[in-house]
Amino acid sequence: MIRLTTIKIFAVLLIALTGCQKFKPSEVTIPEYPDYSALMVEQVEFLRNSGARKEVWLDGKSEVRVLNMDSTTWSEELAFLKEVNPNQPEYVGAFEKSGDEFSQTLTLVAGENGALKRTTFSKSDIGYQKINATFHEDKDVYIHHREIELNFQNGLLRSLQIDGYQKMMFKDTVRFRIQISVN
Image 1 (cartoon, rainbow, N blue to C red):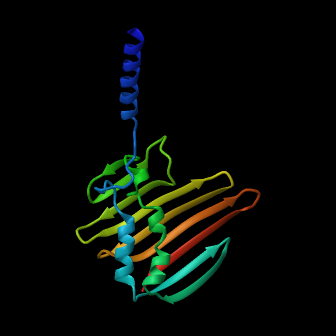
Image 2 (cartoon, one colour):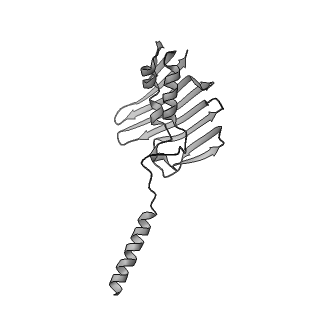
Image 3 (spheres, rainbow, N blue to C red):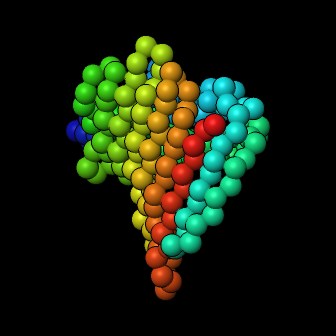
């Protein structure tokens, strides 16, 4: 009799404890954080026939190009917004928020895993004015770090800059910068 009661109590405790675990949903239904992926799609549509001046630095050497951009090219250039998007299932509840509805900083909470360490954005009634993001991956064989800044005017992307470095195991650190100005 005692054995059966003990097993029942153990089963109830086991169910209660597993029910209290922190599970992250497979998809986010109500955006808790800004959706930079949706912003990317919006900007690609707005910028699809605009030109851009792109300057790239790699270990002190630079190259400048003036480009006529279409939606495919803009999708490729802005694809990093999917990586730094805080509105992903793995980030639900992972950021500490500060600021107000027009200017906010999201900082990854200590103990949470994620490559997006911090993002700051400011908005107006028209749309985003500025977005900054810090992306840092520290894997066994490499470290990849990027500081990203996007500037908007009237809700339209005007410029972006990505400063970063990559360190591969047994190789030197490679520093890079990408600057794009929309014409």
